[in-house]
Image (cartoon, rainbow, N blue to C red; front, side):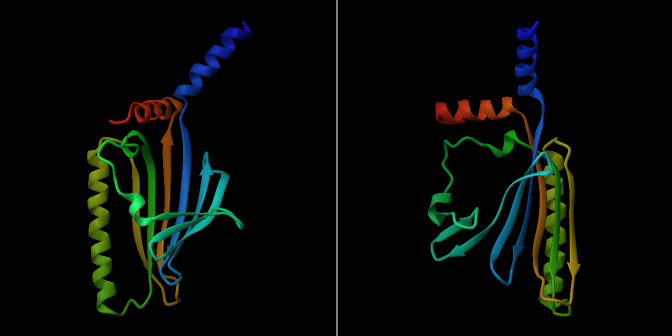
Length: 172
């Protein structure tokens, strides 16, 4: 009987969905991206910030640890496994915060942001998956300017296993 329970739990774990919530704030004034990663939307796994310097991106994932990656390491490989198309994005919420709203380029930027929001929504809807997508633009008089984003990524262990096997085989 215990063997059946263990087998049922192992097979169920392959199909039960897991969700990871990623929140980030891209600050325009400091040129840093502050992020937090949550498992199941409430267990915080990691927080830190990403900074940019000449020729590299530096991810500060703790007070004492950081990882640097050169810009040219982000080049896409033709035979790389497409991980993004295997994942679900059930919720994407963004807020673009701008100041100096009496300037014409800022108002022009708002129009571009709203048009891009509509295009992204159409692309996500065309993909066939249900996504709760929302992008707002807020104007303020204080110096907070940047992009606030909250994205939920849903997947299961079977999807991760398939991605791993494809990566081991070396291609799509």
